[in-house]
Image 1 (cartoon, rainbow, N blue to C red):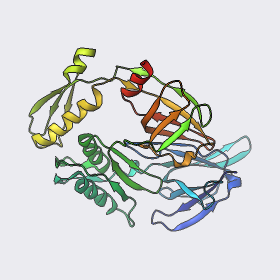
Image 2: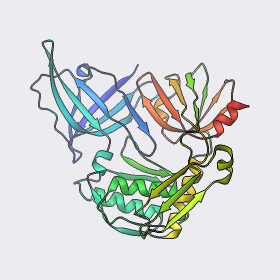
Image 3: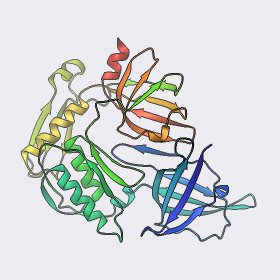
Image 4: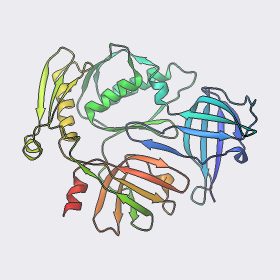
Length: 334
């Protein structure tokens, strides 16, 4: 038996109300992905056309209760972006559109220069964002160590979201904001966190191979106009030369330019797989997070240690988009 508590809070964190589950007209459904966070949630509520309980900017939390989480597990917390009053076939209802925190990160500008670790820079960006609110919206859940210093400059009124994205691009790590608004910056995992059985927990798989997104030679320009080339000769021999140009105005020194260029080639010089796996509720689907790694057993092919890039969540199942890399195709081709 699945039950959800849907609670509303002011933007300062003060409790407003718990929505009666009998007025919720639609299923809880949303997406979650690395280099991002939780996607849009729509709530259709069977309330009167004139109801004024909710206001823009208020916080919506969704807490799940089931056999695995008898004490409850928070699976969603974003803010009300839009309120619609709908009147149709002699019946009115309220529609709430709830959005991810990125919509707020884009509205706060970051203008400092930094030469330091990725952790130092990211903590500064989040602190600057939080300083614009009465309570700290985002906390740091964990930032994995990145060995090289990063020298970047945010002088052109860069949004906090874009500043985080630029650090992310240089380091080639994953970033994520979870259901409790905790920010994570993590390197790719190497150990399986979820083992699922085909035709039991795993309902279906769709494995697609493509060379369309390969880039094996990139020209990177930094702030002073200096352009450097980075390439993968093995990839060029296999797939031909596939070039790209990237103008990185926030990068101010050669070391950081090299970090970006080399990491980009590592990520994009091989074929990609846009693969999806549907997992049913026989597995603890609420436990699955983007960037976790999975292995699927009882399959004709060994599918092992693949990173989850995106999750589409519904009460009965989740659809997982797996990492785009060459290893899965290499296994399938054997």
